[in-house]
Length: 213
Image (cartoon, rainbow, N blue to C red; front, side):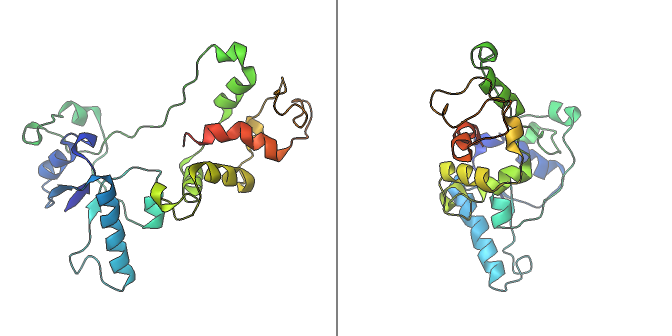
């Protein structure tokens, strides 16, 4: 069986892949929480010394990355042909009419900020442009969150972002350009020409950005 969360997430894409590649899978939609429960059940069985694939309990599921699910419950990637425009052009939401036999297109997260902030809030604009996280860094933060968010920790989203700032090896101070001290933290944050920063206050500057992860 191939487990997916909701039909609207793929609109017949993977039904077409299964059919056109001759894969012996039945596509089953479990909803978001149902899919997470099923993956957890399989991994619990594996931890109890079942040979997962041999006893018929192995599963194939569709999920995105980065996401703590892949670290919390280690899985192997099932490889299908890479996305191509030719494959995409053969797509139809009706699987029987679709010629799709490839993976979905990989998409990166985008950052967006009102352009006028370049003039009105230059420090925020500089921080927004410099701020970046790769998959591994996002995963490290996500794993600090509690089970509700998919992590194995016990922190809220806000607490996880704060903890990541305190403990990460990423030199996030390079993201900062403080030319005009904030009215809130002016007594503790120095100008960009100074190398002295108060950590507890600077994390507030970054926290709102990290909450988008």
